[in-house]
Every structure is written in structure tokens, then in C-alpha cells.
Length: 340
Ligand code: ADP
Ligand code: MG
Image 1 (spheres, helix red, strand yellow):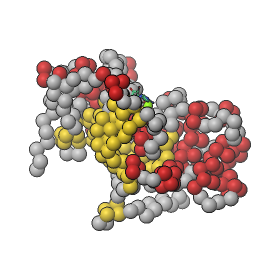
Image 2 (cartoon, protein in one colour):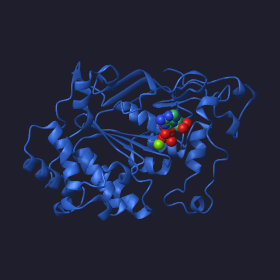
Image 3 (tube, helix red, strand yellow):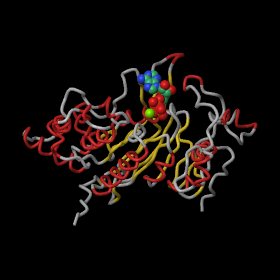
Image 4 (cartoon, helix red, strand yellow):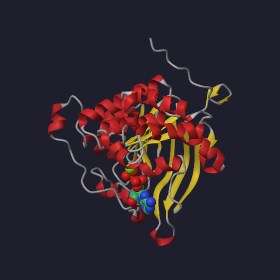
């Protein structure tokens, strides 16, 4: 029988486990001056230890920027402010040596396109062994053995370690990316559209694999997708991002089934529902596109596309606030929750 590995010692404050990830008032801007692109504008999010948070939103809403910011992987043109606490430690003020230690071992990222993230001229076993060698005082032989074991964990035979990326299918390559992400026993995995490039059958297999691995190893997960249905199926909580801000956040099922924000509602209606033939026949598309971050509309950034807009939405820019127990939303129509 497989025994559930216990959470390795987490730093604790007053007996309360420290959150795997806590983002506070994060701003990320590409460039400066009139052409500056404010891609993330004051995001606050929390991933509790061992929990799975889904981050949804259309293309261009700032999801990947946020993911890259978590390990300071953004290009030098990006300026950041706020706090990104990984197991209580602020990534934005970390010294380089500490940051190197935290990458892979504290948190790791699985990107959408394995073909672009894997090196085409190196065998996959060597690529998986690389972070192991970098982070653990171990021999090349031991790192290779670990790579083989990791391949088995993600459902590939260890003998495939000698293959080059082009010799694998898209799903197999994504399994390799997951093996790499697991290589140094991270406490948090960030998966940025990990299944978007895959066909539906493979997508489901990869999602189940990620779910099983994070559960078995008590890893916290931040899963990013434009597909709310995928996230609702996999995650405990959901956050919906629009034009660089979180506009809704709450328990996954509740956000998916009864979104409070008109954007969350439109996004959940835009994708076919599993097991609901009617919605699969007539998925409602969202009209228009998210705004260009360098030219945001005044008022609520969603109001030009909002089906239930009011006059004041053109001028009022609502804050994300408590809307119901455990739920937050940023919409002038939503009455604030009355504190009990
Ligand atoms: P998402 O992952 O939700 O699709 P991104 O974080 O990739 O969103 O992009 C958010 C915004 O930032 C977009 O308007 C995009 O064009 C812009 N952006 C992303 N990367 C860069 C970059 N390196 N330089 C300038 N703008 C960028
Ligand atoms: Mg993206």
C-alpha cells in the first residue's frame, strides 16, 4: 500500500502552518513611460499548504506574468512591487543565492509548451537529472537513477530516459516536464496551462496525473488555465483574473456554478460543462477581447463587455471585497457581505 508522505517540516507561526504561497498587492509592469504595460495590478492571493488554487482568465489577463513573477523569471524590463511569500519568505527581496535554492526545490513551474521548454538536443533523462545535480550533493549516477524513478512516477518507463524530446508525443513531453518539476521535491508547483496544447483525452490523463502526484506528495498547486471547467474539476479554490486584477475568488465549485462577477459568469458559460449536453451544444462565447493593459478603459475594466453594466460602471472601479462567506468579488452590483 502506498503511504501518504507527511508534509516535510513547514515553518510555523504560533502553531499555524505557513501558507505555501501568499501574494500581497503584486504589481508587475513591463517597460516604463507612456508605453508601459501594467500586466498585473495589485493582486492578492493565497495558496494554503497542500491545497490547489486555480487561476482563470482569458489570454492577456496577466496569468503567466504572475506565474513568472513567483520565481523572478521575468525579463529585466519588468518592474515588480508587493510581496510574494513562498512558505513565508519574500521572493522579491531574496538574495540571488537563496533564490537559486528556492527555484526547483521550493517551487517549480510546469509550462504550457514542453517542446519549447525542453532542450531538443539533450536526452530527457539528462534534463531531469540536471536540477537534481544542481540542488543535491549527489553523484551523476544517483541523479540519473532519480531521473529514472521520476519518469516511472509520471507513467513513463525509466528506459525512456535516453530519448530526445522529439521522439516523444506531446502528452509524454508534458509528463517529462512534470517529472522535472518534481525532481527537487518542491513544496509548490505552478502549472501554467499545462494541458492547453494537448488533445482532450491526453489532457484528462495529465490532469489526473498532476492531481495524484500533488496529493501523494502533499505539494501545493497553483494551476493556471483559460478553461474554468478544467480548473473547477481539479482545484479547491478558484480565482478569476481580468485585465491584471483578480475580480472573483472563492471555492472552486461555487465560482464555477454560480459566479458572482459577470466576467466569472461569462467565463464559466463559455466552456462546455462536463456531463451537460445542452451547454456542450451551445457554449456561449464571450464577445470582444480583454483590454490592452497599456490603454485600460476608465471605471470597471470589464464594463465595455459587461452584459449587465450600469451607468456608474463607466466611472467606478470596484475593489475586490468580501461578497459571501469565503468569497470575494469586484463588482458594483455585489453588496458587501455583512460581517456577522
Ligand atoms: P496571460 O498569461 O493571461 O495570457 P500574460 O501575462 O502573458 O497574460 O500577458 C499579460 C500582458 O502583458 C499582455 O498584454 C501581454 O501582451 C503583456 N506582456 C507579456 N509579456 C510581456 C513582455 N515581455 N513585454 C511586454 N509586455 C508583455
Ligand atoms: Mg499565459
